[in-house]
Length: 408
Image (cartoon, rainbow, N blue to C red):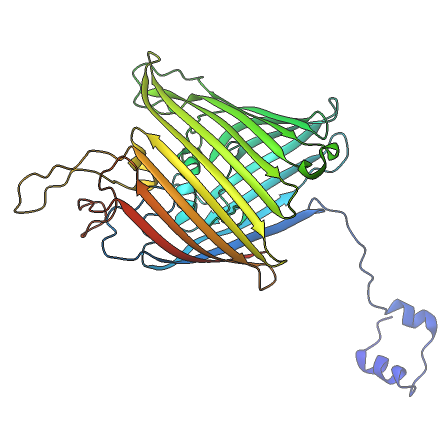
């Protein structure tokens, strides 16, 4: 028997009396917890913003590191990122996934400018030894000292090494942890070079003799110092090699070695990286090369204040092509004769200092000063006029930036 709400109200204040059985029939339904596929799913992400000032005039040819072009003398929304993921649990046949969307100018360059899907892969564990984990889909590049996520790096701006590395691969990746000190990853991907996230990002169109089944090999070995190393425990050495299809006319190979070193001085750490990239034509002849060396230092002055520094040197054919910067391209201004401008920037060095202060919860706030120098002695930066349409007139570029990131 259904009892009207008015009657139930009178019973509540004692004006009428109802039997317990009748009250039980009209009690609110109880919610029963239900286990679903969303159990253990996490949502995380960040909003990355910056303000950049380049002293002096002329920004037509910015320093050619990733994400630099177009940010000069202005406020910037760099990237907005959201990740939905379920990590593997401890079971032998565990399964999970990662789905990450990234938007903004930086995000477009990360994914070759095609789609907002930065990562999307299924993770599977098989009971082989200590557990062999698999990723199939699109996943972040293995090699490199720095991440596509700015907040994970010691500096706001990216290094030249990061600027030339691929950012994502589409393929199958295996990961295995031998013990607490040794782990390895190896996989097969469609290409070494990051390409748009299309139905199939193999590079076949435009090749004289395309190999439809050609793929790329990627790998990374990680060694971690054990607790018995005292103050150096937790220090890591990384070594990786990628080789395979890189573009329509050639193969590409990359060798990477990096390290992070803890020291006896509390809160003082050092790091270093070396990237070497070669492009080989169909006959195995080197078409171009690139290498970058970088050193890092980080010192935590207080619980909230950290000072980070980076020195780097890079050289290679076509260095100026990084990050869409056309430094050194010969230009003939209207009404003038030809000008003698070198066709490309081949050597560059840079110093970066970053002061990070964590004042607000979940917020990273940084102040950074960076100096880039054309080490081959030519004018490579600056230039008045439309971006990439004016001859450079500086050997040095100075940048001051404020970076604020909220991560959740």
